[in-house]
Length: 177
Image 1: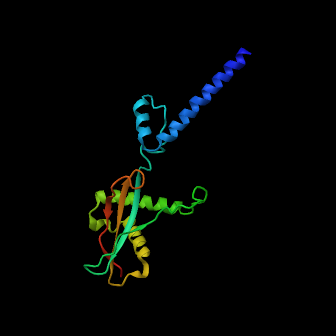
Image 2: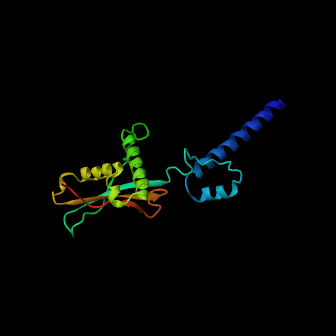
Image 3: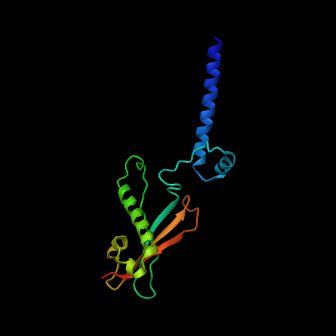
């Protein structure tokens, strides 16, 4: 009888402790007031922050933007290529996932190449040519044969709209023909 009561009490305590730990773990994933408080008091890092393969994955959002120019004065606004449109079935069916991952890989390769190459040499690298072609295809038939076009890579940190966009790279202007 005494053993049943003790096991019930320890069972309830265990459920409460693990439930609180689970809820704190979920709350700690976002950068909010509670996560900063948890960080201050969690000296033994008992509350995990899920980071796979790198110390800070998914902290940056990359945006591929492009525009056209008809002459010296007429420049179109920057248009963004939506890399990951999210629908209701996104967690189950995501056919554009490989395309998005490939584009992000191209962004990173271009950023690394831009460190070691001059702008003139960079325009002959594979990532540059592929992204330039993606911008040209997005602008499509709306351009005249005398038009020019350009692309840029923009980075934001944290949740959407949380930071000021930072231009990581912008291409030279290229003629359509």
